[in-house]
Image (cartoon, rainbow, N blue to C red; front, top):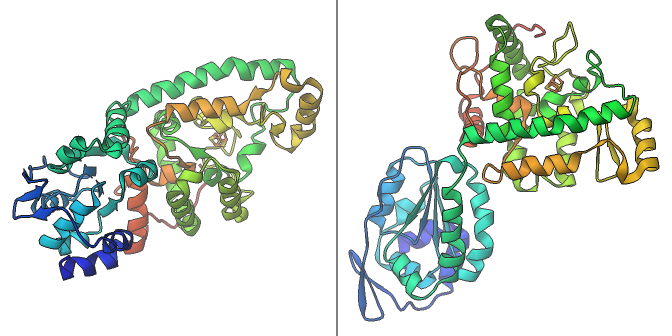
Length: 417
Ligand code: SF4
């Protein structure tokens, strides 16, 4: 292998380096624009250009010229998956990939087809920005893999490609989430009709528990909420923006900790360990009111578009035995669950959460409510941006901006919304 490739691989892709190092020989030979294998010449094909800002997944390490073309289009990230280790070895032996291997966008996944099959879903998860996902196949990698019946190409790469090609557009996410809320309505009404629960307009006890950073919101929930939020009068929107900027100023350390935590541990976000750690991070926040709570009337400013958590809280239970309410009704919930068992009229929160998750199969991320709002503050002026930003890239951009320039969203005044 070329010495400069060796060094770059070792420094930037140590896993691939150690794998390739174990290879002593390769049945492939690489020429300037061809690969020789099994007595045949396999010419490199050109890869189509990549739209700006997309995440790209390429099956098969391309020729360095083609890979450079992709990286020069400034994509968000580029993932090269190759299940033919010897071919990669031959290419690295004969071509100069040194600068490409150092590119910060590039992620290399080179492994046996069987191992890639296991790794791939996990890798895809890191490419959460599925709206802008672009798929490519490089020749001769595809031809070779097809000819050898590669399990990875046929059972891993292609099926995922097909599945992700039919991602619902964000508008559909909004429609499905709104439908889910409609379907939930009779269930909550039944609970309130059957039991003398304390939740009533003007109580809002649960909205005072540091919820802005606690409640996690999926993209579909955000779209519904954002529409509701933008329908507030202009003056109100500006007032909230002003208050919110100040709040962000005070809480930016916490917000960035949260953002980092969610970005790194998203795949565990359904586990109780994840929730516990999330709660730990929020410990100092416990008595803050949600910034969507009207401080005079103690009512929710986005009531028709509030997230699922707010709809479930107060009338639901989890895991069949865990009341999902505040201390006022806790005992009553326990009594109901204990005496009526699974035939009680409280809402089964797990079922609705699972429904929401299934709508988000292709948008597998969520963020604390406050972070969605941070990314929708207008960078100039004193209001909000108009169209929703749904891609995961916005959150990564926030982390980057903070590292390089600070958040830059802060003002000094403070007023309740
Ligand atoms: S979104 Fe509305 S209902 Fe939910 S916590 Fe905030 S103010 Fe309360």
